[in-house]
Image (cartoon, rainbow, N blue to C red; front, top):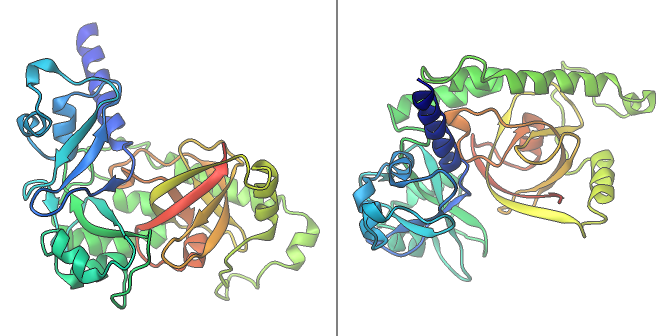
Length: 326
């Protein structure tokens, strides 16, 4: 019985490690596309197979190793992107795969390099109104459909459900049958902490607060109080760590201040969040960790809805760059 429990625990650890993998960036050109994965403790061919939706033998063959050899900790593997685990359909879902834009690169060239994905699909996934691309920005070119990330089950219905339900209670909309019931607790705690934060404001802060809830709050690109704290924590940016990847948002009643959920930054840390597509930035205060749910796989941050609006994004997921005290 003890051995069985230990086996189940190790299985959960290995799956969790794959879900925590950094942002997926495409490499190679059609038809030989792949992503890189650095082997972490507890991972094996089978856990990677579940996470990326590709048979373990194909992973071994792509990296010129045998199943018997196993995986070496810290080794960088090539994970092939095939029709079985990679979707470029308009209604695709799962974990986004990004391309980093080079100088003078066009949307058409990106399409040609990556299986001639339709231009309209790229525009839809990235909320583009035109064909202009900015150097060093990141563009979604498809989605990985692995079992360790959000599965592609009825994608059309899922997208409509996600957009409609997110402003109300995001954790409830994202819950699936195989998730533990207590999962939404961190977001609930985060909301309670927002209320406490707002209740403890000085009287002078109330004088500059926006109008009552009846009027729609106006989003601003920075927050003076949090920006000053960020400068203190990072010594003017000299002691800052950076991070890049996808983010999403949660519903908050906070007005005039921005809050965040993050897995490694301690509570109270101020994170500078930048949208590389338009250069807008906000300063958000960390309240808690990101809930361990399938819909949150691969995320590096969750922002309050007002902060997300200030970044100029209206998508469920958006690419962002983070900077915070190291």
